[in-house]
Length: 464
Image (cartoon, rainbow, N blue to C red; front, side):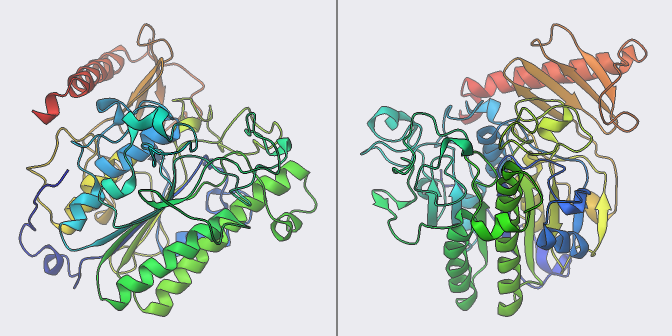
């Protein structure tokens, strides 16, 4: 979808930023809130992310829009909950042509755009069998990144092993299905229509991805062109495999932990490589980097390679309890964000799109509406810990909505609700709906209205 936008005034000079910032959006896959040093993990080595936290802003209450990957990714690029356009689960729906993506938007402002890693918002080929849905069987869901605003792509439709991504690992890595260990995994990297990658695909998958990111950024920097780089690592999604050097760092732990921890440390190393490159190119000061995960850790907890931690929170991936949707997150932008700060402001992946519009001073009045996110950057700048709008969720039979303090949750499509005080009970141990019936009723009304709005969107009313 191509929409024309204009800058509203001289946003950059007003904010004392001389040029539009470079934007790097990094997402891990199934990384739990407790799987990083900056959130208190004492065993997992994430020194580069920890340095980002020291040099930027830690988002203590950052939420994925859904409890699984594809819907969250859609919200990341559109500011809209994917319940509105049919991406309600992994391998379901696709990015519709009518949806406006962040890449399309900033490309119209002169940015060069690149997507690297896991896409999971549609298939990447209609000509041959690929991944979960690619090929003739999934032609109706063909919606690759290069048709959604990205100039450069190095993308897979879905998961790959975290080491030697093209090769099926042993079954101990988990989630290999009926694939045969040692044979091709069946999911390819693509750079364009019928353009399948065949070189530099061995070793750590995060390094393989970063080998494509660095040249993209280098070319943009040499051309003095602002860039958007969306980097969606596969780590630590199953199948989880770590290389020998990374496993050795965790020699005192079980083999499963060696692989899980090692793969995350390998990803962290590549984030450090990226940050070092930005400094060497002299562009780190005005480059905005956001890091987060797409949902909580795979489960059940600590069964084979599912070694992830949701920290103190209840639930894991596929749950709308906090452990399934509250994820680790950081923002680093030296030109505009003071180092070493933390915020308890509730922020969602749906907020990324409108927040970046606000930073760039772009008028979205001609874009697809409604948005589910809000521009939270003024709140961050003013060190606010509360927001005006609620954040709503739906996944399968679960529904939830939260304000700054309270969260309403249902596991049975709204037949029954529990109310939790997230400030005083972040582990969601005590239902206080009978103690605070007015708050429960208020949030229930807001949730009902949001669900009606999503259904209207699903019927195509937003595109008329």
